Image 1 (tube, helix red, strand yellow):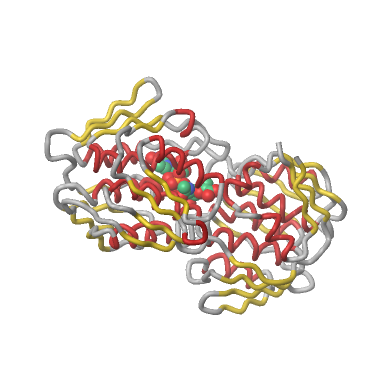
Image 2: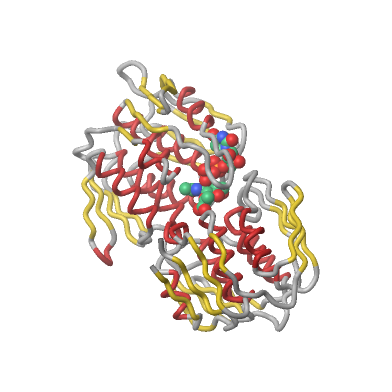
Length: 420
Ligand code: EPU
């Protein structure tokens, strides 16, 4: 299993380009299931999760053509196997995103129920309830969700109020609704920018969607969708991760191919730490102060501070002046990085969903273990700050969500090496 060896202590400096967003690309790849015409996607990040999703789509009968720098061409004309097997779903929970589109276009789907996850239980009952409201017959047995659109007419539009804000739940229901008969209203919808990117792609395929980016999305079902071209939005979490890495190391970096528009909550907190930020239309520059100030955060659905940036911001606070409270409200077990950060010398006390972080003068390199994607990113940041060598084990988690991470960090002057 690959490990990452980091020799810390060098402030990040220079410029890199941000990749397309993993969490926008994953549902958009699934949107290709909704039409028999080709979907041409550009700015697709080359990540493990993306290749897993492509394999899943291919085994369903979707033709995938890799156009190199031009992106991917997906054609689901030959879709003949509406099945997401356990082997694939267990490695990537986002596989659940095939459920809505399969049901909408194929009238049936068999998708393995995702199991537990390192960061929380993450059930999918909201996805199922919403599809049932649209008239799907859903049976959960032998670890699989078996879903069938009742009758000849397929799914029917419905008014759905989700119990909590769910990102992939909103995406799944939106994809099911675009081909349903009549109008669907999703209330308490996720407002995440990735939901908006998916809606934009669906609209360019001929869907009728209003209100994406608000808590009430209205979808008018259409007979069929057609082919389209779509460029995946920039990854706001990758952007935030590099900004935090620059802040923590006392660096000065410029990130291109990205936007601050979707990152207000994170940028505001970085301002509060004392960083200077220059925001351009498609670039962000950050200059760290000599010593950061500790800043408290509370995660919540968009537009509040994203849970996917919590671990990285904890690493920033580890070396800031003063104390900060980090409150995680989305996932019940998303502090696994804290115990690893403590191995590097951080001062963190966990009490249920609160972490009290008191900044220390320096961190010391050590061997640590990555437990999930964003936890891994926080260990990379801590390793870049720490004196001496930090060895991060199980970095396959990082490869799921950060494109060419050691190459990008190298471009910023970090001393990072992958060892097999
Ligand atoms: N929830 C339920 N029942 C449901 C659905 C969700 O109880 O049917 C709960 C979850 O357990 C969680 C909360 O609702 O406590 C929010 O979960 P959500 O459904 O929004 O999460 P998700 O859609 O499974 C996406 C991202 C995650 C990100 C979360 C929150 C993708 C592919 N994944 O997950 O990304 O943390 O939204 O913003 O979009 C990551 O990239 O590292 C990552 C974990």
